[in-house]
Length: 259
Length: 259
DNA sequence: AGAATAGTGTCTTTTAGACAATATAGG
DNA sequence: CCTATATTGTCTAAAAGACACTATTCT
Image (cartoon, rainbow over all chains, first blue to last red; front, side, top):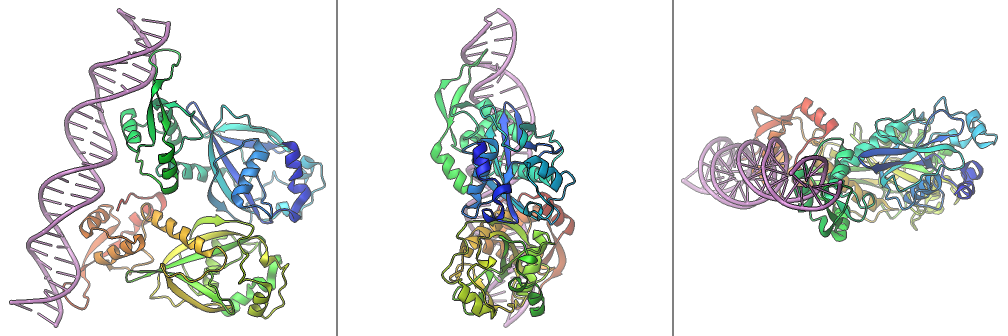
């Protein structure tokens, strides 16, 4: 991991290897037991937090760059990243916490103010949603910390990264009405209460369980199994699984789920 | 106009003034009398057509760049441009029709293969919709032609510009279900048959006129006037206008219009 | 009067939304 | 038997969708 990041280190490779004036930022949402969180990093020596982001190699597509960056910077793999918006303002990267001094200290290199990293970068942003209890995010070489933050408790962020998170959340919620989610998020076999809680958490509002089940089942996207899940006490709920064909079709062409 | 473009000419100013590896492309849809068209340019000496696009100055936001570029390259002003997607693949700009020779000929300058213009550019794309009968698009200094093309008769396009048009059209159609359109497109006072035709044209399908009117009026976004429009023969339809407050609110927070 | 287009109403089916009692498994 | 949770049905209101006749204006 660390080797990977050093091997691809923009501070070392610089503008020979990477595109200039464009960058990638990933908003990685994590869900677990009715909690929606977002994965953030804190560079050593800086006081603010950062989205896991990076630069695009001259040889790769932007979507591939987003995946590589997510892996290198957090250790998370096989994320289903969706591009949602690009951000570009001349002063995006001007932040009192991000200076040649802080960056020099962080990297143990001599970074000066005309370094390309301080230039105006247009950031192409992606978001994804994953199960955060199973994954163990690892910060990279430069990150002092890499951790999940509750969506309502975002710490002080560098640059315009708070805005980017807000926009990503908007996109995620809009997405929910047109496309299926949950495949990479719930266990292969899951219960109705589980997927119900997932939707409630993302939308941050209550959904009538009777109406929710009716609608979701009517889309044909989930199939009831004969098995039940045995949880600690009381009644064991039936298990369901996604119908892969319907799911794939809905991902490509959209679906109507008015919840 | 020509002076403006020369003043801002990327071929002359180059990487000192503009961001590298990022560009803007605008998909300008035009509507008039049941026809949906898109504005394309053909550079002198090239055999393929191009979206009006350009580069971002180091001092401007991407949205401002999109507006400036639209104006410089087509003469169109006050367009309501919406960012819809960014495109980035290493070989995006590799096209047998786009070579140092063709560009040299086009610009009367000596452009060689290592010029920054041939590098991998991530294109941030915007689209807009305008009335094409009122506007007289002017090509810029480098464009031999600048003209409207029917949405189903797109000519041979340079680079990935055909894909960009396809994606823009998808976005426009999706947009139609969530946001109002027409304010910059129809005359201030318009008739029900006119706005009906507009929606039918964009969606490329028939909409029952009775149901369409009912739904549109129920949203409160249009108001009936007492005047009628007199068109050549037969019955004169009533005029309507948009309710500016409702329209603005719907633009910001979305609306439900299931048509 | 006739032709062409604008404008509008009703019925049926589907969907949304509100609402709570019953069934079941584990203790 | 008790408790906690899963599951499911009905009613009403609203909306969607199918459908065609009447009104008006101009010629």
